[in-house]
Image (cartoon, rainbow, N blue to C red; front, side):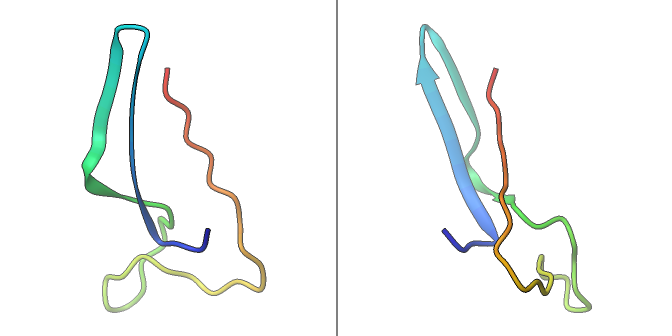
Length: 52
């Protein structure tokens, strides 16, 4: 998917993770002059997020 933000949450095995269920997780740490998270690239990159 092509995106700047994502919402991530998980439940299972008696555990839960809700940190980004109701708020945006910025997939791009770079910020432009307007304060928007973005960068220019020729190809789409991969973002990995692991929940323990």
